[in-house]
Image (cartoon, rainbow, N blue to C red):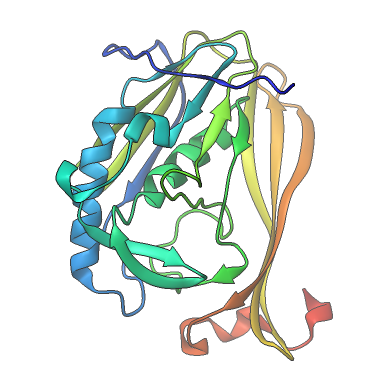
Length: 251
């Protein structure tokens, strides 16, 4: 019988001493023809969710679950209508925009020894042009209460902590730990291009994770995490011509 994960519930208002990774995510971005009010509503939704996550401790053997901490994002709790992806298309729904929260957490976790145990994403489709994109395409997440979660487990002997905050412009996050880890983790994007194919325009890339020994600087491993081949759903005018390959074999 599969053992049910033990959810992380305890938190500390004091930061653990070691910074593992820090990332800031711009809240308001241009996303094609998306109504700007949905961006404002997303800012509201992120601000409501942040106190549910901030300070959470993930000791050895424990599992972080986004929805177990945040709960149902419903109007009675102050959540507003934001952008969601439904059946591969942009749509609207209460609590929309919280994927940005799990995107932030996932990106920090990828730079640590923590084990991702539940992760969903939209990488079959490229929905929006690269206005203000910082992270490589295909490294995002998808969540929907309560059946599509984002979870990671701590299989180390160290205790980790998430610190998050919402400012006027950014969602800010830190992954912290009780003590330093011996390795650093680096995400590398390769083979990034667009291809014209019989079914339309596609976006391609490969995402690798490199593990480096901090003491020696030596690369311990470099593993392929995913390879994306995603249908583009926006106009070609948003793509630099030199990034489009006519022949799929040029990928």
